[in-house]
Length: 107
Image 1: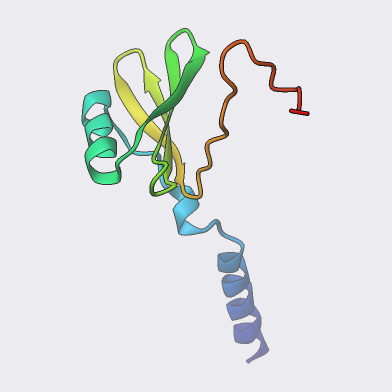
Image 2: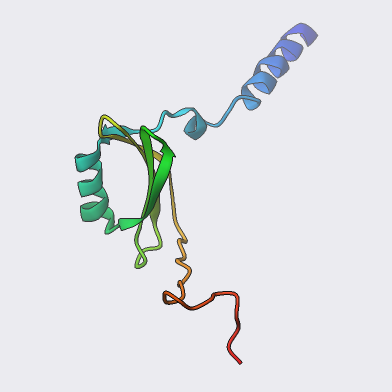
């Protein structure tokens, strides 16, 4: 009886140490045009920022000020984009007008 109890506790203990199902998923990738159209039409997102990660890879931040949702994409040179992250509670920090120093507080 103790062998069965010990074996069952080992099996359930090992299962509890496994990663959550959501972390094991591979990011979804689509042609950039299709993915961008979906972000615009279904989520009301627009491109907020972009930059080069490497000469062949562009990162893009898409978001919606209305819903607070955001999506982070990596776009390869073959125009395939992969969703790296998505979430909510996006807050855009207002930028000062050109020529105004942001580190000076008004008097």
